Structure formats: structure tokens, C-alpha cells
Amino acid sequence: MYPSRFRYEAPRSIDEAVALLHQGAGEAKVLAGGQSLVPLLKLRFAAPELLVDINSLPGLDYHRVDADGTIRVGALCRHADLERSTILATRQPTMAAAARVIADPIVRNRGTLVGSLCHADPQGDWASVVTALGGYVTAQGSSGRRNIPIAQFVTGPFQNALAHDEVAVEAVIPAPKGTVAGGYLKLERRVGDFATAGAAVALEMSGAVVTRAGIALTGVGGSTIDAADAAHALVGGPLTADSIGRAADLAAQAAQPRTDHRGSADYKRHIVRTFVERILTRVAQPTERAA
Image (cartoon, rainbow, N blue to C red):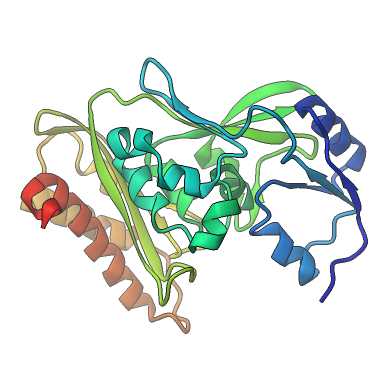
């Protein structure tokens, strides 16, 4: 099937992109990687009057770390760049683990982290990772720039908090206040398939004590699930068999899966529990991680 007719624009600056979106008055879409939008256009699930292609915008294809440890990912940074990133490999294990399992190599070569967040697919990996890390999205629009916490940015299935004349220009992961640890695991029927279930775990530690924790779930609800109770159960003490088991149980309880062709609701809760327990156990027992 062919897309509906639309006007195509390729702005050369963010200000020009914002002006075009303002003119579109809610009937415009932004094209970055296109790995989610183009299929929607072809199936006519999306039929914008205006397509604003931001791939020509300079200076948005970066990912970098600030002096204080804050990680910034520009709107045109591809999944493949993050997959190969030495910054993530050495500084942010949760992001590094997720970058390797995003969709398939073809999608990773074009798709973007920021675009994934904007798409707000309940089965999208990056929203869970950024939620676990307490990150936010920076948007630029007619009224200037603003930072939107990820918990407020994803407002529902395939819905985000951007105004019609705003462009998401950056995703930001705040600087940690301790040693970082964590991981991301997901179950998929085949490479590139949507997640049957997934779990992101991000920890900050002082010695053996967990000082901050984030746990978020993929594919087991109407949108990304912040398993806050599970995360809070870890804070203030070391990782033990009891605390790990308690957090894993609470994460499974936070899941809101539905029985479908990928598995029963009980099965998906079991996967969530297993993944959270596995990630935390690997952190608590580094020799297990190397095995």
C-alpha cells in the first residue's frame, strides 16, 4: 500500500523545523530514522499533511558524556552508534545492554533512540531503559527549550507530551552519584521481533549498598511500566538473595500483561521476575556475569 499524499520539507535548522511544524498545526510528522513512521505511512495508520525530515539538521548526530557524567544523545544518533559506543560500554551498562538488542541490524543502522522515545511503543526498549535511569527528553519549540522527564514524556501507547510545534532534540541521562550497575534483558520470538517481555535495571551503589535503583518493564502493559516499588525495595542495603527475590516479585506484580499469541499473562510475569532476578544476581555476583 502507498502512503497518502503529503507535503515534504527538509529544513536546514531547528528553528526552520519548528516553524514548519507550527505551520502544520498538528497535521505534521517529524522524520528522523523513519523505522517506525514509514511503515505507519505505508499502512495509512498515519496520514500527515506535512512530513518534516530533520536528517539534514546539523549537530544532532552525537552522543557524549559531560564532565559531570551526564550522558546526552542527540536526535539523529543512530542505534548502531550506541551499539558500538565506548562511552556506554564503559559508563552505562544498562544502555549498553539494550543497544545490542534493539530490533535488527537494518533497523539499528537508521533508527534513533530519541525517535523511539517519541514513538512511545509499549514494546519499545529505550523507553524502559531511560525510565529506569531517570532520564528526560529536551524539546525545542516556538516557546524555546524545555526538559520533559520521561515519566511525563510518554503519556500513553504511541503518545508523547510534545506540542505540535516541538522537536525532541536530545535525550539526557543524569550523572550518577555512585558506581553504576545494571542491565537489560528481553525475550523475543526471533531477532527483530517485538519483545514478549523485557526488563531494564539501573543501580547506583556506594560500595555494596544500593543508593538508587530504577526498574522498568517492556511489553507487559499499555505503556512502559515503572516498577517503582520493586526499585525502592533495593535502596538502602546490599544486594542479597532476599532483597533480590523481593524486588523480582514486586516487578512481576507491577507487570500488566495480556495473554496473546506470544504467551499467557502468567508466563510474561514469570519472565519479568526471572529477568529482574538474573540482572540483579549478576550485579551481586560479578563472577556470574562473566560466566
